[in-house]
Image (tube, rainbow, N blue to C red; front, side, top):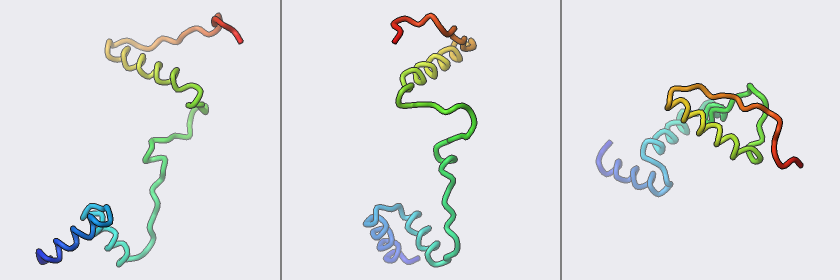
Length: 92
């Protein structure tokens, strides 16, 4: 590619808010056609289908606390201990 064409392509990509590589990929995909497979969103966000459902909005503080505690215990080379249920204060 001659320098002038490369400069213009970089400017066009920047004008579209794309990297030069992404601009070239899109042009190639448009030219080559064919199926445009969509990535599995589960891969992008590391989602899984196993385990019980969670309510992040309600339990986020507890979940973050447990994750931090678990990491701390790993740092001190210990295993997390399960808390006993029941005997909670301030019933509702």
